[in-house]
Image (cartoon, rainbow, N blue to C red):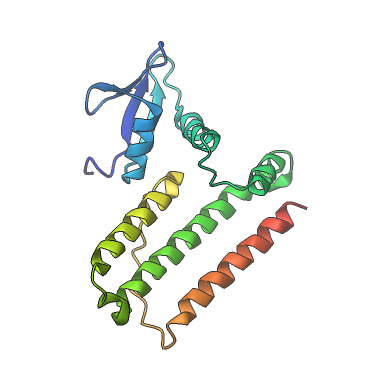
Length: 187
């Protein structure tokens, strides 16, 4: 297995300092967030006990970003997550979230593909730079979603739809369906 396919091992010492075992230096939470955004998975282990602390640190990274005003998670979603810990939704929520983020990522990939295939846009000067920025943004948005972040779709490219708006309509419908499901779970 190549180095990039294996999770990067981070060891937490008793002093609570985090040590990158590949580069042999100490890292911060922001360094770890950058590693994850670049597409690499991480595993954080307590050196003394051997406990896996990855989930705890990923949640801390999210909390830090949210507290800095980088609000990605709406209050209603956070409220529903808190409620799910006291309901029977706890068993189904991880699977639902995984499927939701996969649909989100696939929808974004379809949108990028659609924009790439639109010949009128491609004729504008600087289109390639805009497209590269959009792809980098989408990668940054989707690369930090835990275990499913590194999963790439191995599906063959879909046939081009006759109506260019058809894929966008499908994405809108999927998002509306997700919102309806979230609203049901909140009740």
